[in-house]
Length: 330
Image 1 (cartoon, helix red, strand yellow):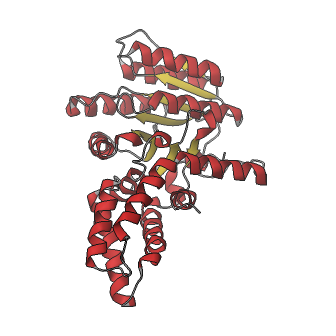
Image 2 (cartoon, one colour; image 1 turned 90 degrees about the horizontal axis):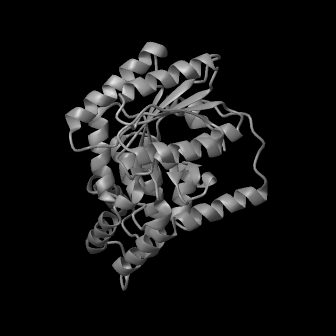
Image 3 (cartoon, one colour; image 1 turned 60 degrees about the vertical axis):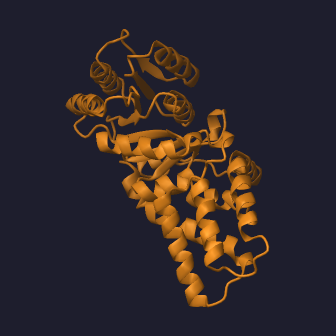
């Protein structure tokens, strides 16, 4: 896996063999199977018995996209784009609709992707790259950190993990298991300690030991947005005392299986702190994978990773073209 999203440029790596590429495609297809089958079964019902794309078909398509968790705003954009094509081409049959839908979804996600250079800073000698990971409890933050740490250490990176979610003993213990498994160093304090203090200690230790990457876990409480904002701001300010431009990335982890709730979580966290990348987890067990399309479009924040299974390598670097191809069964 190339860590382009983390470091701003691709690390040197051996190209995947054809067999490995095929395996990755099959795993992505399998991970999105529920979303794909749900979308196309609804689409098939919407166009059943229709020969042309007319206003009624477009109304049906709008309902299909909204009930597939693409989101209202993004759905409206897609429908308007298809309406323009119908008006321009004068005649369009329903057999073409799938291809047109694929093109419009790909175009929207390309617009949201942004410049690759904006994904992150290049690692500098002696200065660890700091990722602050945020998200609600249960979204998969701890697992994402563990998988990412494992992939990074396997790529030869020295990784430090800061257990700054000091309100849940289970989260700290789970993170410790992942850190040991990944070969990463974890910094922790007692339950109830100041999260900013944990982040500070982690960065100090990482700098002293020439770490390449620091992953900081944070608490995922949304019951008080002001409290969340203050806590995350304090963590950021304290880290900047050790490394002036830290954190280099604020990664929001969203549970894809929650559908529209993921939109609300994204809204809350983007209001609480500056989010620079997204990871969408648990896509393999849900038919709500359309949420990736809507969140990518609505928030204009790059989707960095997607989770399509329990395995370490099933936290995948998000590729828009591969995602759309898998979604449409190509």
